[in-house]
Image 1 (cartoon, helix red, strand yellow):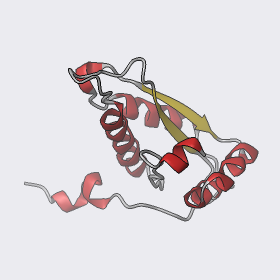
Image 2: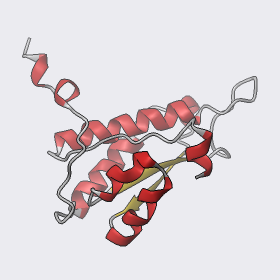
Image 3: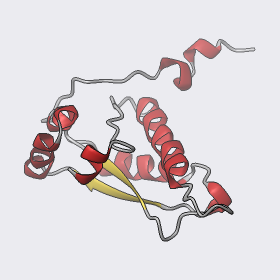
Length: 134
């Protein structure tokens, strides 16, 4: 058995320092989005939508929303993963399953970023009402 400690899942780290001037190539962005869409989702509803930001002014504009978002202002690329409640699977109790679906999608982005040699960090919003309504 090969050394599992060298696999991406064991070597991925949260990175909080980026080279903002170094743009992420479109090919890598496409791969990240494809990886995100490969995540499992409840009843395969795939209720995710992706907002890809690579414009410095737009990225800088989200940093003041919450103290945790200052990391975004340091990055050349931000992928915001949004859940579509209308397409989300709803169980017998009517609750939407998109938080779990989006979490799996985000994990795929983080692992693929590491595989591509890109630094990444997960900045959470849900379930913090203040951040959601920011």
